[in-house]
Image (cartoon, rainbow over all chains, first blue to last red; front, side, top):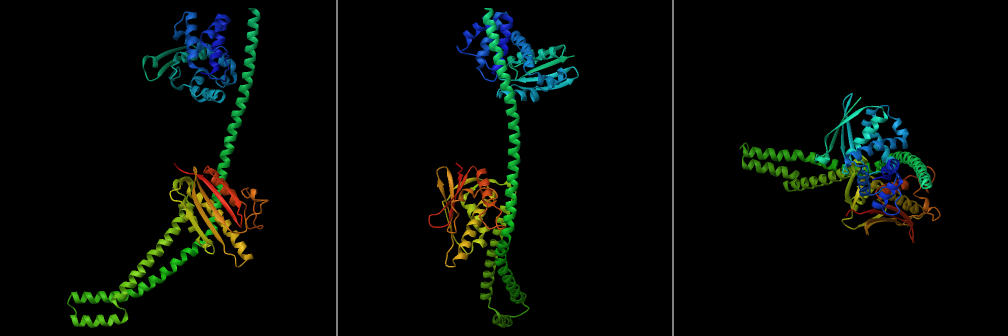
Amino acid sequence: MKGLIFRCLEELVIEQKGMDLWEDLLEQHCPEDRVYISARSYPDEELLAIATSVANALGLNMEQTLKAFGTYLFTFLAKKHPAIVKEFTSFDKLIISIDDVIHNEVQKLYEEPNLPTISATVIDPNTIELIYNSPRQLCFCAEGLIYGCAEHFNESVTIEHTTCTHRSDPYCTLIITHG
Amino acid sequence: MQNYYKAYMREKQARDELEELLEEKTSKLYALNIELEKKIEILQRQQVAVVQSEKMATLGTLSAGVAHEINNPLAYLTCNLDTLAEYTDDINEYLSLSSKLINSEVDLSEFSSAIAKLQQNISIADLIQDINDITDDCKEGCGRISKIVANLLDFAKPTAESILEFEALEIIEQTTQLLENKLKQLHVTIDCEPELIITGNKPNLTQALINILVNAAQSCESKRSDDQSFSPMINIRARQEGENALIEIQDNGQGVDPQVINRVFDPFYSTKPLGEGTGMGLAVVYGIISNHLGTVSIDNNIDSGVTVSIKIPLVH
């Protein structure tokens, strides 16, 4: 997983729970000299271990933690790359372009070989069907990102997670109702 | 604690600024890389165009020789067909006489005397022998023409269709056959190990060998014009060397001035008199061999002439 994601988690934890907790998490789960740099890749296990401890510290389950993290991640990324977000004038335009535009930009900057595959189809003016597929199974984080995106565009949104790899489906289907 | 937090925020800001800088540079590098890829694509297209135009020029140069090579078998094919046409009357008479005998329109003594009369003109044995000879000659002539045309078609084939696996000997033989007329006055030997399988664009590799052999032939001819007793020679050898097929073309011509030998693969560089060479022949060879992940080099021989060495990876 790219350091960018770890840096976002670092910011979230320090903002919400302070530096001590972050230092504890680093000591518990990471090599001694760990400093996260956005463009570098770090073991997925590290993220999972930190996220599990964060969930315990916040008294949330993993699903809720990943959704909350996803929501925060959108704001974090939008702040870091305002030019990319500015390209989109509405919530649905950004969601439809995740694979073609956003992931393309990620590839340019970070050369991430394990990006999820995402395809989004407009069902009607207020509904988008989004298919998420990734061996990392971070569909709840993806849900959080969508909530974060809706907040950014001042849209209200509900997400129905109709198929999910955590329930042994071959991929995740998110039916997004917005407006 | 407050101080530690401030120190952390400062370190974080430093990381942010450095990452921003890195991302900016990465974006620029990415854009430049895209531009570079486009330029490489244009260059590759231009290289294909240069090879194609060189091929067309070669076809023009070869046309007179090829026409001559086709004309020879065509001449005796025509001659044989004329003879066959003359024999047609004799054959018809023999057949018609046989038919009359079968239908009892003539008796045996009439048949025998008519046959004896016909035999005075040409005997059946001679007729059979001649027709067999004519047929064999015609088949051989048609075979030669068909081989020349097949070589030409293979050479002129569009490049994209032509990535194949083949033996090094095939392109060597095809090249020498296409250049048969140009190489007639030289002593050419081919010594090629069997089963040197390479992969690539056959017409383009043939083009490369043509360019090298034409240079070798011109160098030998030029030396002979100075010395009539000179006996020109080209040796083509091919063998395995490690993971590569090594093809060497050695001539005993004039050789190349050691001061300029390093420049002969440069585009538009020619050692020939003004107006005679385009300076693209060996540059095209270099391009074609590089595209086959191979190398090409040229060295003056100790006695006389040059040896051009081509290395192309073998198929495993």
